[in-house]
Length: 111
Length: 118
Image (cartoon, helix red, strand yellow):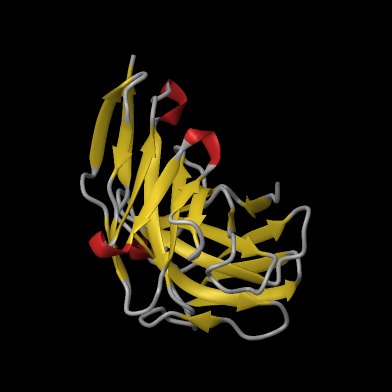
């Protein structure tokens, strides 16, 4: 069975600073990996997904993530944080049948 | 982009009553819909996978008789929480996919329904 660990339940950055949200996964088969963003009282929106093609995946809103098999990681980055990036971010992993979400990381952006 | 709606967005009910939550794909036909549950400050947990015209597939530990799922059309799936109790209070989110219906395909999420059982 697969699982996801998001390191840091809360990350705070200044506006314009680098955003780094960490995600490590465990999977017995080559995984599909996802990052979702959730704004307060809303559903989830897909930021990006990895499906065994390019290891560096670019998503919406300037986010990207790199799949590193040797480190079993799929960290999410953005070069310059914007106030509108403040939200909850979820990493997810799936095999053929199931999708598991990480516990989430709340990103706060300080002016 | 594809839009998924949920109704109601918030519901408060008395213990012992049943509550129905609707999930609709507004501008596409959803071959498969997924139902998730999210506890406060926690992640999402997949409850069941719903395919149009067939019985839902429930995750281990999810009571199918308590959480009734009906996927009557390619644009509508409903989740009915029967005989709700306070421990059923949660944020319920649905998602829909247009492709193969597997979790790997892009899932479009609804805005969620917050259920409070008194």
